[in-house]
Length: 93
Ligand SMILES: [Zn+2]
Image (tube, rainbow, N blue to C red; front, side, top):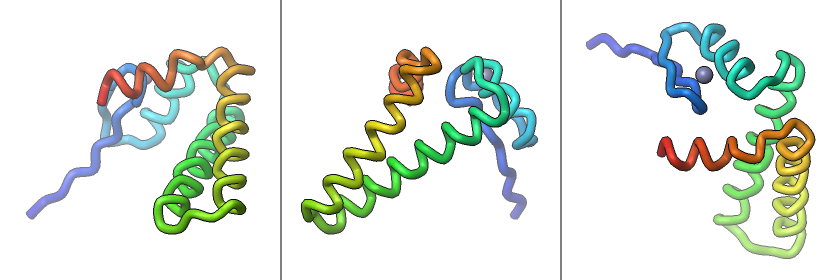
């Protein structure tokens, strides 16, 4: 069996086998430079992880941590004018 890895731009749905190509596409689609994109990826990962922990165990400290992770991501999106990004991703499924 041959398994192919495809990367898909979350904004315009462009597909490529090259991670770098899609990384560049997402930078262009979002209007972020490479450094900003890496920061954004880190923020989104932190939110996902915080949400994952929250679904396993609910306690005030975890709730607080996930609130902070979400707030940091939203602040980044606001600062860079990405408010439509979450909607685009949701629309694309
Ligand atoms: Zn794109």
